[in-house]
Amino acid sequence: MTTSQDELLPATRRALLHRVARAQAEGRAPSMVAAVVRGGRAVWHGSRTSVDGHGPDEHVQYRIGSITKTFTAVLVLRLRDEGLLALGDPLEKHLPGTGAGEATIAELLAHAGGLAAESPGPWWERTSGSLRPELSDVVGEQPFRHPPGRRFHYSNPGYTLLGALVEKLRGAPWEDVLRQEVLEPLGLSRTSARPQAPHAGGWAVHPWADVMLPEPVEDLGRMAPAGQLWSTTADLARFAAFLVQGDDRVLSAESLREMRTPAAPMEAADVASGYAYCLGLEIRHQDGRALIGHTGSLPGFLACLTVSVEDDLAAVVLANCTSGPLLFTVAADLVRIVAEAEPRIPEPWRPMQDVDPAVLELAGQWYWGTHAFALRLTADGLVSLEPLSSKGRGSRFRHNGDGTWTGLEGYYAGELLKAVRRPDGAVDHLDLGSFVFTRQPYDEGAAVPGGVDPEGWRGTDRL
Image (cartoon, rainbow, N blue to C red; front, side, top):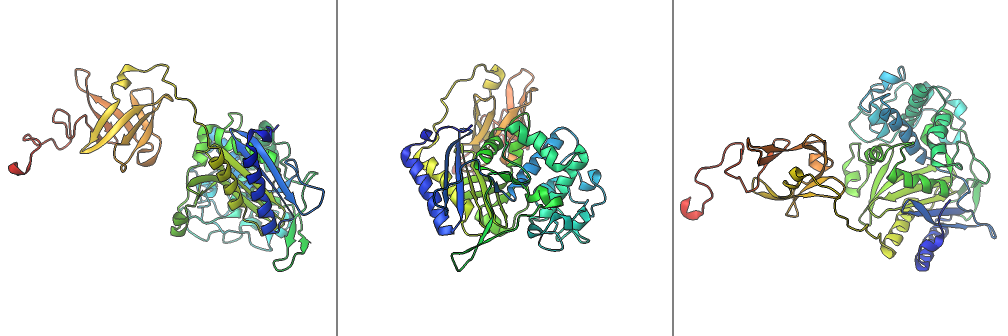
């Protein structure tokens, strides 16, 4: 169940409805539905339609296109977490004979496998999947357009292969596995591979006239893991909350953080625009925010799900037209409207319940050469090492239980931090991936590689 719309202020609700109404009118969409999620729950639903006296609600299905890929990626990460595969494994290890087996599973998830963008043969979105009954019909005789791992190149056949991988390792159809392992545990009862009433019809709107043409609805067959699903704003709101919080019945928060991490080599234009592809998720930067999610389209439908983790907000927007409204822009605006009108209230500061004196001893100022850093202990059990100036490398570190810490982000992600002690137990220095941090700049009493000049610091009179 969703929460009351009254949880947002009336002015905020009106601003959200105004934005959706403007997008539906200017984009000439037969209908548009939207939802906003805050604190893990849907707090607003809105819709606009061209049909008098009827407005779709949060339970009306729309086709969501490539948002399906995020669901498929969740299934693959579940296989990884169970130890049935590694993301660095070549596809051939688990699904031989595809002709694309040299691409790794991680590369396929990140659209970095070098595969073609589309399948050979007739336009797959508007033709029956029965025309492509085998994987060979989807990938073709020459599946690669680029060397695997070299660049981001969006590939629908790549996700078809990932769906086939799920089927091979689970011994069941992709659709059944998805329902049992993701949809049912998360309560997404209105998400399905085929439309279930009530659902919207898909339309093409003439670019130069206010007239419409119905679009065909095809079962994508083998291509289903790339774009088959139908869903509602209510279900996608729950899914958006899951993508941030995790659910141990489906996928842990840690694995979802991994899914939200950029994983594909991007072109210069993408870097400049703030776009990156992760493991089944996109990152776009808008209005100074990192927005994580996915867009989707199939003939007759457009879809967008986007999340601002920092603002604890998400938005879902669905429309039943082939082109017209720019749904990512609409979704980003919905997030912005709430974030600016009703900014997230921070959790209250609370002190740590317990602290290890040996760790507390490390808190304070340290120097890497002449660069000043501060090491802090936080209530979540992590330590952070951050530069005191506005520039420099910093990271949070997770304790390993043996007196060492592992970096969680940036330059030091995966690197080991440890305190090196003297024979009397006193701390001599911090070792971070071989870099030495001392209590004073080039502390003459510490074991600094290369040694410290015995004459010490000097002014110009001693040069």
